[in-house]
Amino acid sequence: MLYYNILIKYNVEMNSKKFIEQWHDNFLSGNHDFLDNILDDNVVFNSPIVFKPIEGKLLTKLYLMAAGNSFNLEKFKYSREVHEDLMSVLEFETYIDEISVNGVDIIKWNNDGKIIDFKVMVRPLQAVNKVHQKMQEALDAFKNN
Image (cartoon, rainbow, N blue to C red):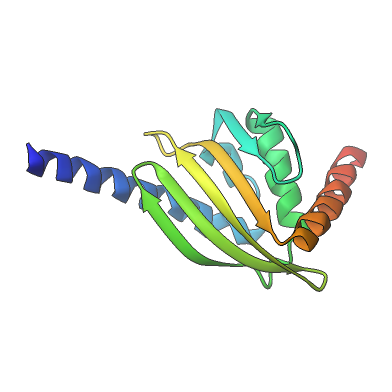
């Protein structure tokens, strides 16, 4: 029984590591079409700048695209990753204008490799304020297009 439990845990951890590959392969490319395949229809997104959770694929995609447009992706890097069961935690570093941004993406997967929960946390306070400003600009630009 112990061997079986270890094997199951290994396979689940390998799944979360496998699932994150699609994120890494596409996130920095600027092509957001992959989000249609990787986000579950009922995904819940928790933004550092919005009080209540954002529900559904369409709005989550919009917020993730706005985040991608807000960050300096040339300086964006994931500095640490932890994968356990169907969870991935990715620590990132980047700059917005001259403000250093440090944060984490906490991603929960379903068994099909779809993101069902995505939470972003950002620090320090100056970074949160800058993310808020840039996200608002990006969301306004999407509305006007």
